[in-house]
Image (cartoon, rainbow, N blue to C red; front, side, top):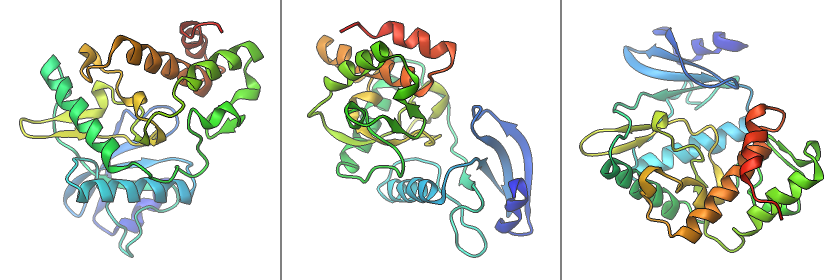
Amino acid sequence: MGWEALEQWGNDVARREPLSGGVVNEVWSVRVNGQYAVARLGARSDADLAWETDLLRRLDRQGLTVPVPVATTDGRLFAEGLVVMSYVEGEPPETAADWRRVADTLRRLHRLTQGWPQRPGWRSSTDLLHAETGTKIDLGAMPPEGVARCRAAWARLTGHQTCVVHSDPTPGNIRMTADRVGIIDWDEAHVDAADFDLLLPHNAADLSDAAHDIAAQAFAAWDAARCWGHEFAIEQLAEVRAV
């Protein structure tokens, strides 16, 4: 259906301007009943979007600052691949103190979501020690030596805390004010080792040298597998030590 699905949010709706949203989704600022919001159109399944919208609603109820899904006129949280969410005000982090606040917020996310079910169709890094595919990852497309390196990096996460990870806590996805830290763009969120969220500027999560190395190697392997077929993936795989 495409953007025509926006009509399911009522008569007083309109697209305003495109926002950065990567190559997978189209993201626009929209007006819904006089309020500024953000709409994302993609090809995710209903089960995938149900997982994400349920997560965001629950995190909002727990006091985290996240985009809150705006329901259609008949009460649905998404329609035909389209999700409309509240706009989160704020600026990206700049200082080491800002990033420590981000680290504290991410650790609160991790505490709140221990035992959370996996996003439908996704695999965690340690799942991929034995599985070949999961969402954007197809290890069968990679050279065997590269797969061995990735799996060796992920094996070091065995036994680590698992929970929902945002998976992309970069400055563009953080919205800070004086009294809160907001996190936007949950399109890559899934259940995995908490380490994936803690590779922050200034080592704001205060990881030991060993813990930082484990996280950095695992994340480079994840990016290599997730983006295989692009030059970026080759660069990331080069960061993963040979076994």
